[in-house]
Amino acid sequence: MRILVTNDDGINAPGLTVLERIAAEVAGPGGEVWTVAPAFEQSGVAHKISYTHPMMIARLGERRYAAEGSPADCILAGLHDVLPLGPDLVLSGVNRGNNAGENVLYSGTIGGAMEAALQGLPAIALSQYLGAGNRDLDDPFEAAAKHGARLVRHLLERGIWDERDYRLFYNVNFPPLPADRVRGVRVVSQGYRRDAYFGVEAHQSPSGRRFLWITGGPQHLPAGPGTDVTAAIEGHIAITPMRCDLTAHDMLGRLKERLE
Image 1: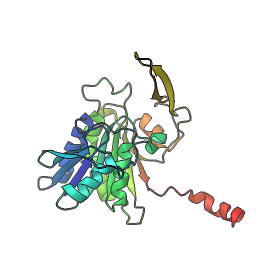
Image 2: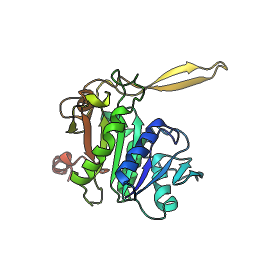
Image 3: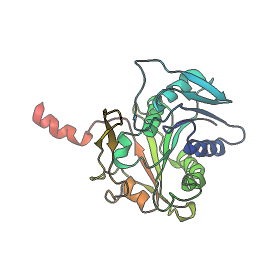
Image 4: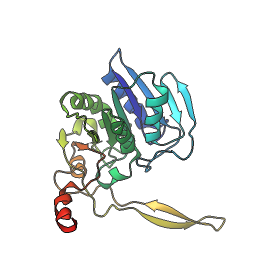
């Protein structure tokens, strides 16, 4: 198996090292793992692509590249420039922090998986929740490292992989716990934390200039039963099937009655 990996925390992020190990285990002895990741952190860039300016790409080692662009850019570079043959699977992550609830809409990790799906490839985004249960561990990514390869294999073997125009991809969040306390897997919807919205906070620099820092709300509030946020907080690996189609299908019928 040939696997392409990327992330949004940057080429030197510890979560990417975890993902490369997961990918190597899934690919097997005769497989290949190719890494194309951002040269610098790209958290919060969502599905951005750099179509208004070029990006530099550098070979750092065998099958390992850094690109001055977003995770979606890295997928495009990997598919159309770096890899001699297309991958069988794309993995994005392992993100430092959760990509559940409303965070999904901002996530560069999700953006990488989304671009792979738009390019017609099976894709999985993986993120590691951080909290009191794992933040102070020697390896905060322990849950992802221990359960990641088995989870990816399980999805490949038993997941649904359609070939629709907006094909399925998967969002996985590992709970903020040591690996031996993970309670299993839950297939859940994307949640919404009502008090976790983003805002800004103003600061003045020593030179007198005014700057704004982006602020976020608490990340450990529940988001209702059957959601990614709640499942992960309660100790489960949360799996959410996703598509790039943003149409509110539940509103089409009612809106046609009102407007057509």
